[in-house]
Image (cartoon, rainbow, N blue to C red; front, side, top):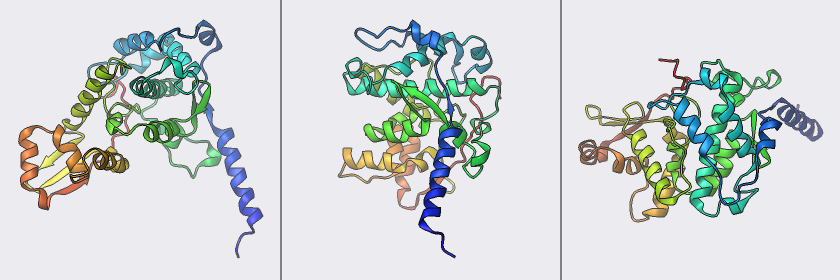
Length: 295
């Protein structure tokens, strides 16, 4: 028997209400907001830089245990993110590089803040969606049902990545700068991404090369002529191929074509020699927490 339209609409509305009410709002403390004054010239990353230097190691792992005990810089920077953004205060972010740097740093800071809120955990998948919405996948609890504030607008990490960053910026190297607090993610650098266009360009190129040259993310098996790629390339394939189509319309737009310039010369040459029969496969993603206390 077919359901009546009114019943279907009612079910959709009930689900929407449950989703809204089931979200966890990660709000900055009023005391931190009251300390803020609107920046005169630009957005200040000093506190965030201090946080990254103190609590992040050279492998991009975070000391969440100590950060939970001493969260002042995290809380104050998050309050700053919650108060100012390129959308709410565009004069503070006059260039594309300053906008992109803000969104990347804000995403990474919010991911850290979301973990600290629930720590100790073993994975972001441990942050479950509301029980009444058990049919949503486990990691939606972290990426969708936790809500953060950016310049007065409250939204999820999922929305921030897919509806803000991916929609507004063409260069997919931002995927190698966004850190989702998991071991399979690109490493979290010990410095903020810079609003300065030249420095941001160097940072994005550095992080892209670092990610692609890591055997845990990209590796070539010459015996079976297979190129193994992180699942990030599968999930966002259209971002990489779309950028190639836009930037190099005369060349093939494929994942292989995207990663080749970042590989070492020997590996890249081997792949080119066997490109006609090359197989592309995807690696399982490691959702273990990027915690210094984990092996």
